Image 1 (cartoon, each protein chain N blue to C red):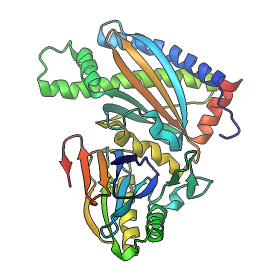
Image 2 (tube, each protein chain N blue to C red):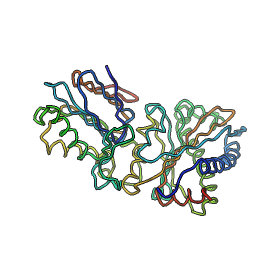
Image 3 (cartoon, rainbow over the protein chains, first blue to last red):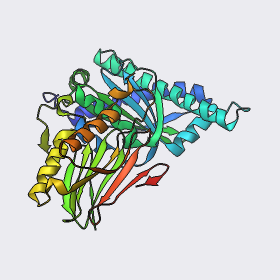
Image 4 (cartoon, chains in turn purple, brown):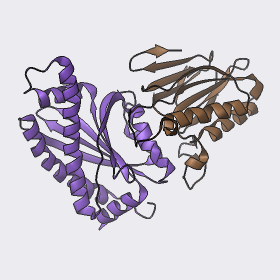
Length: 203
Length: 169
């Protein structure tokens, strides 16, 4: 990793590909939610693993995070994190067509709908990244947790300290309209996968 | 009162008038050591169970750009706290410990057996390191599937653990 200098050019290139991926995802999400969902903005930042805490403005803020391994967790992890109150609103919009669901059902269906939405976002994201880098990025089934965001993410993130000395943490923020839902996509890539990706962006 | 944040992998020592603050602790374990007589102590925000698990090529310890010491594993962090507090006049026989964290936030993560989970391993490593110094654990709130924040006052050695649903200790 140290041989790859992360320049503004690389970050801009990465953000551009994220933007393309998110527009593809928004079309699929619109179909799922039966309403037009657009991506208002995307921005990306890169942090070294030991500065993971710096990307979380408020480590105690309660988020619903849908977390997936990348290639069974060997290459990395990815989390889609949405503020709890926004996640509830987003889930309600996704399941609103189910009129006779009890509140408990809505909760269960809501988690399922959020996981579906996260699958769509992450699937589009990695399809674009795979196309760009020529390396396959396949994600595993999602797990979902609602708690303080730092607490939710520290195990998946720090797991990498054991087998990837210089894992990269990528943070992408997207805003979904008209729902006004902001989501963070936090991707941790092990050294080899990150090198491949950054090298392709540096060209 | 001075509030000092202790982020993941960080270790701090201080005396009365200081409150250490570790926020959003999941599988990590926060270790608080206190010497009642001198009213001084330290906090370690332990990220990894042992140094062999840590593949950082730069070694077990490093210092960040602000001069803050980064020690990521349980044994190294507790050894540092004991040595540093000893240097400040608190022998190990007077130190008492309180610990919090070591949660398992997910029912399923990477299909690991419970004893292989990071939170469980971090907690066991902290207990072993404290036992090796004969430091008693006065109170603990560990495990479960809940994130925690920990505040440790060096005025009186009291720690407050808060979570999304409750406040304890």
